[in-house]
Image 1 (tube, rainbow, N blue to C red):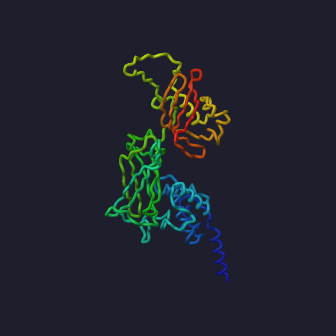
Image 2: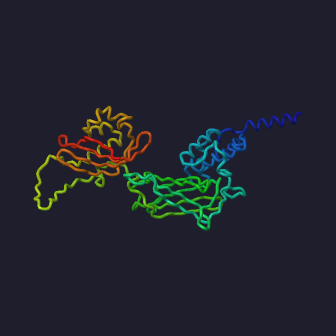
Length: 386
């Protein structure tokens, strides 16, 4: 009887010492606490728990090498319980475009963040291929700016060049983008089957000052249990109008704001006569540039002062966050060109991206009408061209 009581007591002690949250003091305590947490789950929950940890280790931290990834993962999940880890993994999967949820059926094969990469008999990641192909397709094509993104899709191929059919895998897929030998972007995803959608890379994520000759080099690697397949595409063209422009004041950039040179070439048979006019010496594009820069810096009063537009009404109407310009977060100017200019009026065509405070970005092509007010160009009309 005493032995039975002793065994029950020991069992109670061991159960009470089992951890229910992550202890990331070191790698050993991290593994021990995760094992304790998994032991309290049913079989299906244990599989999804391991998948969640794999999602976080692979996509939720920035580190090189398994040891550094585990340390970084420990910092992210330290003190968290199982439901919190599932919620964090769901968020990470959604942010990275991975088709995985903590409430769905097991979909990543046999995951163990502390295990080795050696293939097991039932390892869904043990896929034999002959090569890797990469296709690139311009997408999100704007009628004014052209394509805004590039779809990059890798495929594992057999010896005949046909895509391999597989499912239930979790192949870590890494995209690296270079220009003139300099790495400018890295992204990760999971290839779970042969219908992998790949990467949708926005040109706006590429800084224009780092792109040489409007071309990039793309390298994609896919990691199976036994081998990593890699493929590169060199000299992939990008749309320069869609690239991320450097911050700065376009009014001080001669490449963006150039003085207007009037064309005084006479028509055949006519004699050219130049008469003085009251046209301001300033370039009308300077006023438009000042207006857009003030919006970009959220200096709404400064933007309003560049205009004399009755359609915009009072400053309170102009700066309204819902119906006016108060909802603008930032602006990226693509192009400014001057239209017809007379002594009293002018027009400027502007192409730019405007991002509101909710994070939505819209490409616009706008014609600004300007009038000469006491020697200064003031914006008098604003037309969005479809």
